[in-house]
Amino acid sequence: MGRLDDNVVIVTGGANGIGRWYCTALALEGARVVVCDIDGPGAADFAGWLNDRAGAERAYPLCVDVTSPERTADMAATVMARFGAIDVLVNNAGSYPHVAFEDIDHDAWRRVITLNLDSVFLCCRAVLPVMVKQGRGAIVNVATNLVWSGLANMAHYIAAKSGVIGLTKALAREYGEHGVRVNALAPGAVVPDLPDRRLSPAGREAVEEILQYQSVKRHQHPRDLVGTMLFLCSAESEFMSGQVLTVDGGLTMH
Image (cartoon, rainbow, N blue to C red; front, side, top):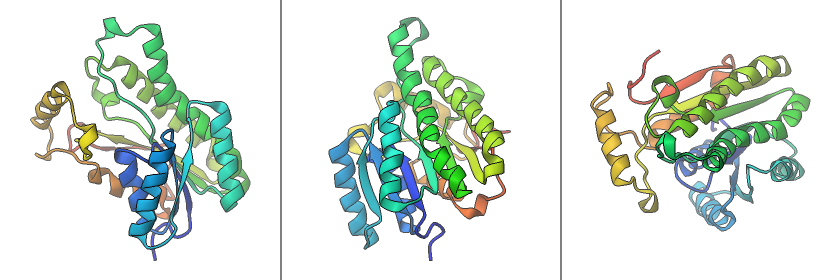
């Protein structure tokens, strides 16, 4: 028996990077995982691989543009038509460009805010009516530890993720009476595991510098986030809402 047996879990940005780790762990815990990604073929390929590994049909690919009000509404409708429930939403989709503040024009600012913050708003708005009607649900919003410390050349990204944390707390207050929990997971500097997502030289240099200040003296990998994500998705955290759990090797402390 898994911690999430037959729970229907939507993971945005699920076909690539850390999202693949989340989807894999959820499927192996018995969840029915909807792998949402703007890369439709990639989502389909990954879902096929994951079903082979899980030994059952646990993953279901769905091509979704999470920055679109229409497509996110369609996402919720499609999942409901197939499964009749939405138990968990993991808002994982995002990007983290490194750009000096003086080089961020308004279009670049809006792109990062749209993908990292607006998408969370849209996906939550799409699934919350379902969760309210069910009288239960859990939402996990992925933020970043940089909201606690700041970092040069990432102003738009950190501003967006700060908004994610604010939205998390507001929704936790508003929807708790309906049986819906909303929490956030704040990762540190994760070293990618896929060859096509290797860090740039500047990114590698930043990670090495950060390592000096971590309490846990090794690099952070995607697998380091899996346990906390599963905890927030499962009944093990049923008395938690509006919280931000930081997983960064003790770089930041609260």
